[in-house]
Image (cartoon, rainbow, N blue to C red; front, side, top):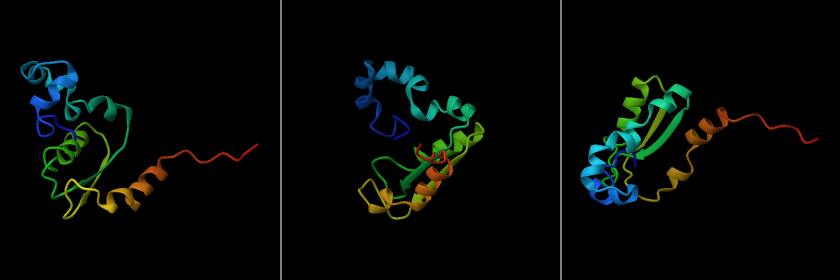
Length: 115
């Protein structure tokens, strides 16, 4: 979930912020994850998303694709793996993704030998 408008929707999300729907809509750029990417890009934080192209609960276009577009425009680096035919489900590939493992390992500090 990257855009509160698409999921869970402003009506449902507003309570988590202690705001009315109208207040959240007015302050959306301050709270919406898709609008808060600049500090991450500036710090050089890499992002990896796996998102199903058949997800109707959290639509790919409004969430992960939009984050990728905005993040790259800000100079950030993001890898987006689109899981073909997958929706908002517990598909094993979301949890056993070699690209994600490689992404994490490539950015991990080398292990130190025990003393």
